[in-house]
Image 1 (cartoon, rainbow, N blue to C red):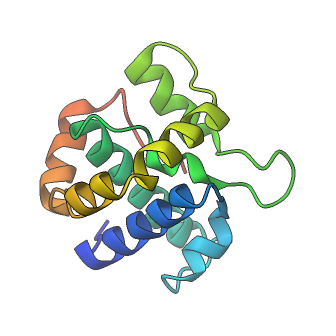
Image 2: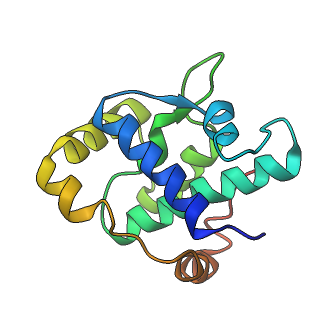
Length: 142
């Protein structure tokens, strides 16, 4: 699956903006900003893989799961099972999305963090390599 650095950074930047203002965005609306149709299975897999790589990046830099701000538009308004699976694998416990969002908001509202770390990203190629070394434990969910 080919993920461009630009698409990766666009979604990550959107997650940072959601976090700074204690907001959430839906999977569907965020995917559509990339021209992806969330109802189309290949587009959904690509978008979920981008979210997966964002978490791999944040883990590398020891920051909270930035994708906690991407939620179901209808129903529970919480992240999907991929978020739960990743937190279970990395922390051996379920992360409470509301708590993670609060940590993200506290972190990204600080101008010093925003200025110093907004551009702290690994290349998609490096993230793919790191993700591959974590498998099968951290397989993205469709």
